[in-house]
Every structure is written in structure tokens, then in C-alpha cells.
Amino acid sequence: MLTVDNINLHYGAAQALRGVSIKAEIGKITCVLGRNGVGKSSLLRAVTGQHPISAGTISFEGEALNGLAPFNRARAGVGYVPQGREIFPLLTVKENLETGYAPLTRKDRYIPDEIFSLFPILQTMLGRRGGDLSGGQQQQLAIGRAMVTRPKILVLDEPTEGIQPSIIKDIGRAIRYLRDSTGMAILLVEQYLDFCRELADHVYIMDRGEIVHTGPAETLDTPEARRHLTV
Image (cartoon, rainbow, N blue to C red):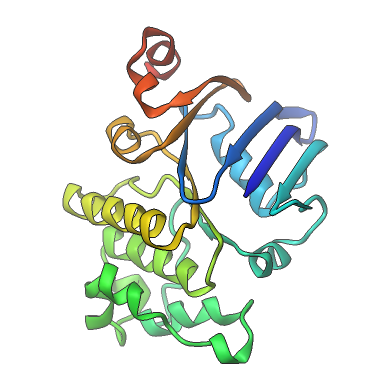
């Protein structure tokens, strides 16, 4: 589904990614872990087109994404849930969800029922402003907004950050449901080790802008993996 092949990414003279290669497959959850500042969010910015790469290729369903604007990647089926949620605080929950209509044809401009099945709290708060929601509710809203775009791959940047444990479980169930019921590819950046251990089919660990470990989720408990994750 998604192939990142030997990419570099720079912020001015500073190099954030060095020869990074990963794959996110259909019907699987791929998790990227690592300490703060190792390049995880930069990798997602490269995938979603938020920042240009300086070398390598990114392809989706066999088509190169290099040079495509973020909105064209959304039209191609890349759904993005950014770190910090970035919902619109002055828009209602319903209006926030409707912003996901932008890449859709007119006939598809409706909110899928499965969003309210996964996150029933959103249905009860449709008229409430996004900024009045708790952090966990905003995270559910951000995932729902991405789902409105009918993505083929869902890219999530630290969805458990600052979220209470009960909502972390709800988010985990939703991600698992999307993998199992829709065959969606899911690319997840996370620092919460247990969350990835429970959900991931395949993991990558980053350190200093490079991939330093890859394997099934069970390998997170090996000494090599832990060495790159401990502070």
C-alpha cells in the first residue's frame, strides 16, 4: 500500500531523516516508535506532504507521491490525524467532521455511521464547539474527521498523547476495528510501548533519523529494541 524508500529530509542545514525505508501494508497496523526528537513526526510529514523530502521516493498503491500537495494526497486516500489533534476550536463537532468533505465527490459528502458507532460521544455532541471538548474527545473527533475522507491508509501521529486511559482503550479498539473490518492500512507513530505491543502487526524503531530496528511486535521485548527505546 505505502512504500517509503530511502528518503532523506532536511530542515535547512539540519538533516532529520537519513535513508529511511518503511512499508505499511493493507490490513495491517504498522507502528513507528522511538524517543523524542528522533524523526518520527518528520517521517509522517514526509508521507502526508507537509514537508518535502530531499532524496528517495514515497509511493502509494504503486504511484509516486513525491511532489504531490497534501490535499492531493488526501484525494488519493491518505488520511492524517496530526499530533496535537488540530481540530477547529470554534467550529462545532459536526462542522469539524464536515471539513473532511473537501477531497470527496458530492455523492460521498456525508458522515459515515461507523464513526458514531466507534465514538458515540461525538453523536451526542454534534452541536458543541470543538474547543469545548476534552483532550480525549478531541482526539476521537480528529480520527473521525480523517475517517470522513474515506482514507485507504490512516496515518496517526501519537494518538495517545495526553489522553486518559479509558479513551486510549476506545482509540485502540477503533484502530483495530478499522484494520479488521475495512482492510485499511494504518501507519501509527507512538511512544506508548504497550499500545503498540497490543495493536501492531509490524514495528519500526527510529533513532537519530534512521531506522535501527524492524520486525513483528513481539520483537519489542528484545534487548536490542529496548536499548533504543529507553531514555
